[in-house]
Amino acid sequence: MTALVWPFKLCIVSPLVMGGAAINTQEELAELRVPSVRGALRSWYRVLAGTGPEATRRELALFGGAGNGQGQGLLSLSLGTVPPSDKQDWAVQSTQQGLKYLSYSLTLGDNRRRYVPPADNSATPQTKAPRRSGSRRDEEAPKEHEIALRFVFRRGLPHDDAPWLLWSFWLLTHLGGVGSRARRGFGSLGITEWPSRATDLLARERPELELPSLPHVTRQSSFMQARGTLERGIRMFNEFLARQERIAPTAQAPHYYWNERSKVVWWLGQAGRGWRSWEAALDDIGKRLMDFRRGSGVDGPQGSALQQLASGKALERAPWRTAFGLPLAFPSRRGQQYELIPYLEAEAPAAQGSKASPSGDSSGGVQSTSGKMRQRDLEPGKYHRLPSPLLIRLLRCSEGYGLVLTRLSGPLPGVDVAVVEKGQVRGYAAADPTNDLLDRFLRELPEACEVQP
Image 1: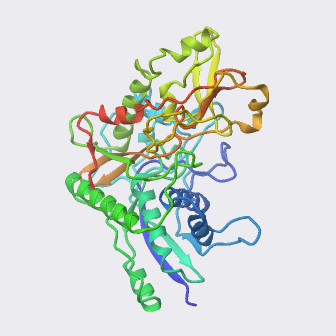
Image 2 (image 1 turned 45 degrees about the vertical axis):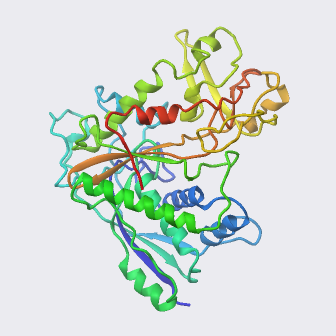
Image 3 (image 1 turned 180 degrees about the horizontal axis):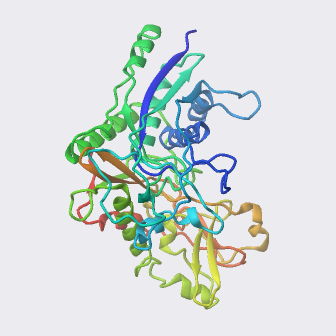
């Protein structure tokens, strides 16, 4: 069987923080790597694929697995030449508090991450500012560099698997990103060329297979056109899902997913004009997220979680701000730090008669009968990280940069997943189906518009 090839071309829209084996060393080079792109693509496949034997079969067929009798999948990826970057360690100016907040882990402890900078688009120049010694502006802005990414199917591709893979890639390049801090606006990739040639190849081999030409935003001339293109793409995606037979995930799924309650918001800032640089866009949304999470009312009706922890009281309910992801650290003025973590394997009865959670499911989650954890429940191997269901990414068109914020459905910390204080036999947080903090944050963005497909 003749190998099928889908040739895409991409561009880097926001800084790409991705390295190889020499991470956090002087030899580190930031580079776009095939395993990372493949992993991100697989994650987005899980967002849309649902659960059950058929979803698992399709995933293993496409991506392969390490289990007995699984082996290599149908899909191979290859990247064209992408010059590695030896850009200096990631650093931000003291005035860019929002950008610093979003890139928090890149300079945490001994982390000194390098990055591939986004290309400067002649139609969207970087914000003019005085050059400062040691800043990223000391160097000339990189020229546009298209990245050739090829999907290669050496054993052919079953016709019913093609659309799932295409939509996974579309979601990755419009709602997600790759590399470190991809959920917070970094590693955004844009499609600059869709493979019309692949349509001909597939049509010759499988005439019954239609490869849709999906809309992409990057080369649109205005924000209005970009938003319209995004809405059309999401509408086509929802229509595709509606035609499929899939088992919808529940809030007990081990990952986030897409359903009718998932939400996409388009935001161009308070003035509604977008931004002329990626730095300004990320700094703006970063400040708003930081101020919101530090504001009043983010811990729910029980009051400040930090005050409760510092006073030695056990938490009766998870602080609402845990919905933004875990672990969550509360540094106190006395130098002591409290850390809340998810407890995904806790065994406890579900709450009775609970309301539908904002994650999109009528699940009461996990609730304690005694308010305390047993010692044997706190085995170190049962601690987990639960990433945020809120995704921030940049989109670029000829007018400048816009932001797309996506709230996925799934296991919400403090609602569907128990929360405990690390290192303590206390604080088994009860489910709280009233927590809609993520949607409240999106509603309070000035001039934000929910994408209506």
